[in-house]
Image (tube, rainbow, N blue to C red; front, side, top):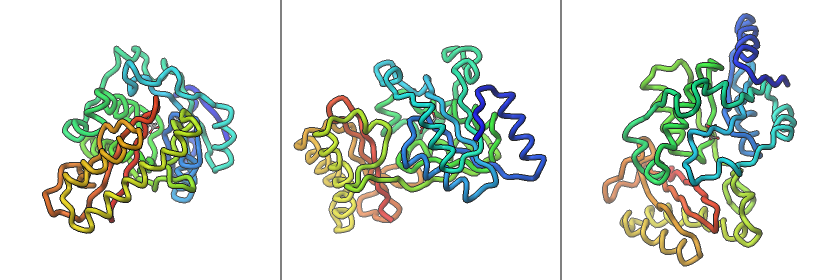
Length: 281
Ligand code: PAF
């Protein structure tokens, strides 16, 4: 597997593949890769002739009090894992390559409406940073398909909408969330958890399952959402939201609506903020 840091090197390699008629799959990441990321690379490998992954801790998607500085940077380990999962090219740019005018001087994309709720409401500006960097990466890599984990469900929806709205020539695919044996969704942030918090963290997934089951039994959505928040609070979490939404656009379903829904939770456990979701279908 080749690693390049500059746009010219990336473009030259991809151009070479294109000249041989190869298709290109792309997996954007912020590094500190785990089995969830590797499953995305394997999916790309199965769908396209060549696979590019990027590792870039994107400063514009972190708020001022978030974990940009402490976000784990583990490039050597990521390179080994990517090579093993079947990645052909790792693009690992520095900030100046993606933000030649600095983060503050950069063009910034805003995907309206769908970013006003849930993560967007609790992390102002987060999705502007995500949309901006993903659009830049798509322009550089020019992949046929790009694969994102469904764990970041709202992010996937935001990117799908951006691609459609800007007519970007890339097919966006969501891949299933990878979970630990007890059900905790794999995330780079899990390593911030103490052993006791790690044991308790599974309650997020258990609460999502309970939300799904209660809706299937006909309980009112708002009651289910409130019960989920109370359950997590009693267990020592500080929930930002426990929500049931339409999976296609994250709008609020009508009372009694049971098809095409997704439950989403964001909650703090100690100093760690965890998110997860569960589609009901
Ligand atoms: O999901 C992530 O790791 C990031 O938000 C992404 C899509 C790589 C953009 O920085």
